Length: 475
Image (cartoon, rainbow, N blue to C red; front, side):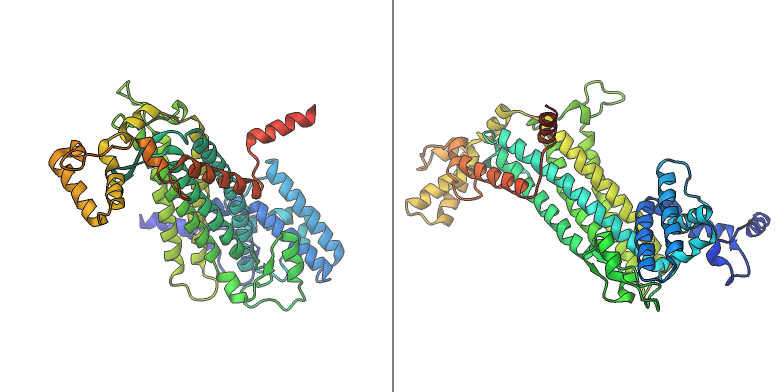
């Protein structure tokens, strides 16, 4: 083993441009693999090229590099981007990261003039620029997906607003509610997620380029010009903070964790409701799997995977917080570990939101089964206590009398022992709650109306509407 290790140490990776000069020896091969991040950060190539294009245009505008050189670099970058998109070239695993890959690909296109691109910037501000551009893009996409999920929930609430089922506390039947009311509770959860991501976007929308390694640059750069071209609303106000800040990544993962938590809660209810013990709904076959041995099984795998994948996003949040917790200013190589938890959270939340939105429309609910469960006489206990209160009985006394009646006679006890009362139907009970946010049909319809106004105000157009408009435009 020692001999093998000795052989490995002599196998050095050929030095790249940034190692020339300072280092007398090539990088150890094992360390080169350990140090490399290209397998992870390769997805940032579009952002890296966009940032470089904005940077070189600024260098030309400020006459920091000759206009002719800037035009050559700009054309070369556009060709590199096109070649990557068309698969004519690939990102090399032997180069350390996406930034050096793009730089070397550019050098192969335009020669040594490519080296002028790195004037007045460092990989430290370059990488955080790429990451901010990426997170901004992903926030916009996830918010769009959430709007679609909100639309689906609103439609499903409209379709099920007359279905009555038991509402639960402690997973025990509590009081009747409308299914549309129940689904609108999830609408509000995901609406808060949409708003939370929008708030996170504000703190991501800050352009760090120009901070260089940590102290800025001596060149007369125009940071506002770069920010405007890249779509940032402001530039960072402290160079040291700019290169070391990853709060925006942490905040995105936290927001993703909240979305996943809400998805997981909905998934768990669908798992329970679709079980034979509840029998409240049937999940679409296209989102379920079977058993390798039991022919009768129909497993709610899509819901279970959403529930299971929630934990990995929580883990990603803890991972990035732990990475950041003891870092001194400014850049440290530890920050390379920010991307895996971020990218994994992006992939998980994007797929999970899409899966839930695709599955919900085809879920079939069983109104009779739900109503039968909601017709449990014990669910009327609170309403009967309220009647006693209206007759002058203090609520705590009414509560005790109803509780004792049920203890002694079960649900039949509600009609005995001096408590002979009309037992309200589930419909009467939900309609008795006519206040804003209540279970009465009018209240639920108001919620749905507000939801549709929210979607309209935020420019959401359903896929069906887009297809319809597309057909009309062709006529």
